[in-house]
Amino acid sequence: MLSYLRENTGNWIIKIFLGIIVIVFVFLGVGSFGSKRNDSVATVDDEPITIKEYQQAYKALVDQMRAKFGKNLNDDLLKALNVKQQALDSLIEQKLVLAQADNLKIHISKKELQENLLSIKAFQKNGKFNLNQYKKVLSLNSLNPEIFESLQTDAIRQQKVKDMVLSAVNVSDLEARNWYLFQNTKAAVDYLVFDPEQYTDIHPDQGQIKTFYAENKDKYKSESKIKAMYIKFSPEEYKDKIKITDAGIKDYYEANQKQFKIPQKVEARHILIKVAQDAEEKEVTTAQKKAQDIYEMTVKGQDFEALAKQYSEGPSKDNGGYLGTFEKKAMVKPFADKAFSMKAGDISEPVRTMFGWHIIKVINKFDASVQTLAMASEKIKKELAQQEMQNLAYYKSGEAFDAVIDGDDFDQVALIVKKKLFTTKEFDIQGNGLDIDDNQGFAKACFSLPKDDISDVKKFGDSYYLIRVVKKIEPALQALDLVKDRVTDDLTRKLQIEQAKKDAQLVVAKTSDAKTLNELAKEYHATLKTTELFTRNSQIKEVGNSPEFIQASFSLNENNKIYPEIIEISSRYYIIGFKEKKIPEESEILENIKAIKNEVNWKKQSQSYRAWITQLKHNSKINYNPKALN
Image (cartoon, rainbow, N blue to C red):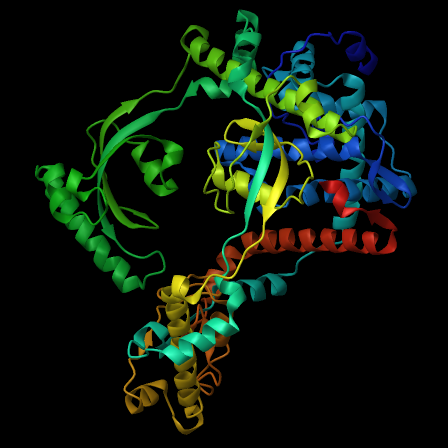
């Protein structure tokens, strides 16, 4: 069959971007900046990872990120996600795992590969493998069967190795029970907080201000500035060079049927009586009774919209509880399940969700449908045109980067790709002084470049750029008169923080003499606060999600009521004392034991596999040049 597929693979290409839905690893993505050199970016036990492999892996990851984040994807986000390192790590891991597959003599037969291909849903129509669909999907991703089958074979071999590693992982009932207790035990604490902003009577004198300025001169220098040259590749420039055919529109429509399905929708109102998801049973029952009473009013014929305005505690109250028209996945499951089971005009009895109790009134229901090709044609044409223009802009920027790799200077690069070379005004790290699609993103990219270096391809807005920094202006110390207000504010804040910490330390030193935190609060005229019950993963109201605060809270008990050290969170200082601890009921643990074991098993498998990969790396000779990633 494989040879048949190869023989019947056409040479046609539809130039659009689609994410292929298969189990191939990240390096599957094809296309690169077009490096013409065979240099390697890394070696794994003397096995090279070429620039081309790295660029393919990087582009594949970027494409995945673009599909996920859309227009929100920019250079800053790519840096924050460390995509370059992710791409290299994935290739290193691939080389290591395939080497283990070789050692274990793991091979994939033609029959096994064939069965795998037949099972891939992206290649199926009406539940069965379809040769035309197979060719179409590969073509849409600029692949041919030889390349795809090789990649898929490696992917299956890697998965077999992974399965062998994970087969030794198991979870006992006791382990699952302890995990559940750890995750779901709740604590509440009393606390005193020493907030610097409360110390409003602190005012530094002129001598203190001058001394602080002299000791912190680096903080009061002018901002660095940069001047850069760039080549811009805008998709709109290629508008006249694309042609979207009816056949292309039809192909896209057939390959993306899910995109044109219009799900069933409901138009509804609701009345919400709030109650916290982890509220005590008494609070839940009280809220339910209130909701039930309101429901009885609707049964007696009272106007639902008027009742919503009077009783609802949700944000839609002023609109009579109107939620508009929505599809099922837009709502939390209990609410959606009930609303979509009702008929137009029906009013439900109270339904419990994470937000509280809801009484739902269905105004109208709209059946699921599918847009016809004629209905979707114009939208598809615009989408394909935009993507084609985007691809052309990216391709042309890649040609320019090829020239950079080949050693051409920036002026020559611009001539080769027949583009104008732009020069910016001087600008700072925030992008002030620029007029680019994304001033701040462009500025940050420039500030990360050494002077006279040329960047790789950068994307700002919808356009692609190559950048060269031509001038860097170093920061200079500003006179005290120019920055005096900022110096005064900074010093005042510093003194406030110091005083808050000093007072907190004074009070915590007395904890050994006090039986409770309440006694300390009275002695020092401080306000005692109390948290609600929280788990180790909770966000604590007015405190936040401080690991140190949470760890200290769970270390307290009836015999150890006050934590002996102050805890700093965002320059505030806390002293905490035991209030309450609530352990899950045994019946609750037993009810969830199967799900717990699955969760713990997944975590253990992930940890085990990462530990195994780490050990492989430790035992292997891996060399790479960080500069090569740029």
